[in-house]
Length: 299
Length: 181
Image (cartoon, rainbow over all chains, first blue to last red):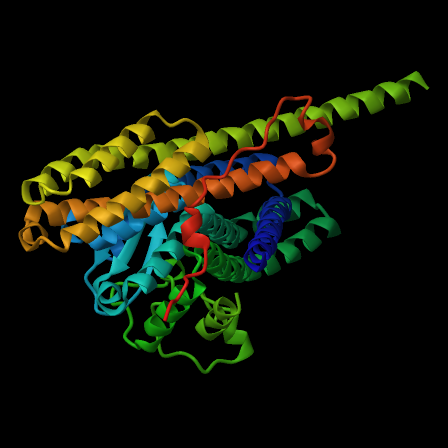
């Protein structure tokens, strides 16, 4: 019963964050449009531009990620045990078998990507396969499959796109400020337009920061949720807990991980940054591993 | 007054419509999950003739076991419904276990590459059956819960929805192990 409650609580929080995000984006576009005095046609143009960019990244984000982390697809004969684990757990989750990729890196870590369960990819490092026993590996794979099943992999892609949109809008606004100065004086729009302009400037500065924070918060909620549903699948939370212990005990970073893909991994791929102030913990892509292990052990 | 009446009726109809659709969806999920079990059961019944042929080559005297496993295999193929399939499948698991136990007595058989591969395949299939059963049962639980909560329970029978059967494990596995001294 405990696990079901964890899942539903996490789902509600996630929806709330997505809802706030949508309101945030809509407000920004409206404020920018007002402040510049361009009105709705300009907003429409920006939406189309961002839409085209988003649409193509929606379809190619997984391939891009796999290329940047230097992952390679493997066949069943390369690692039959891993294949069986993934096949079996996918059956238990009612998912089609995802493609399996391997990163040649001694640091243990794993992630999942793909826009829906039919295009899902599960990726593990060679370090992970060497260090973990079968039960722990099942824990990690079930965590990744939960990301696929809960459409986290899609959500993360969409959130990345939303953040990208905000950044584009903010850039667009700060640049166009230089060109719109004269026009505003002639129109004599008065105080209302000035107020909108000020709000617009504040938004332009704040929006990339806020958007990044939301992106990271979504990712952190998702990790707890995937832990919970992974445990529901294997019915053995201790397997994942002990895998997380082993993974976090290894201090080597994943060589090919970057800021752009760090949030995908099961444990933060940059290591050795434990002592942190409250503020910098806002920028974490992952919840503290100790906290996750504690929750898993109490299930 | 009539307007209020019409609105209330419309609201009830909308509600029933919504509940009906969600029940249909849940029911389809159950039968889809069941076909996943069938895929794995089929794989198992396909592997068994191979196993019998291989074991026969080394252990001719275990005729009784061969007959039993052949019989249960055809019973599994003809079995209908979750409960019957689960029962026959559990019996078959037991018989397969005794075949592998008997194989311990034949060193040549145990060393045979073919036999080892079959053993691996069959135990993998066993795991896959277990996972597909888990998925099926969780879908059955969702569906049955939807059927039995209030107020759905009051009209589910009228809409001809029946609770689905769980795909059970062998009763023997559930009993505590008896230790004798």
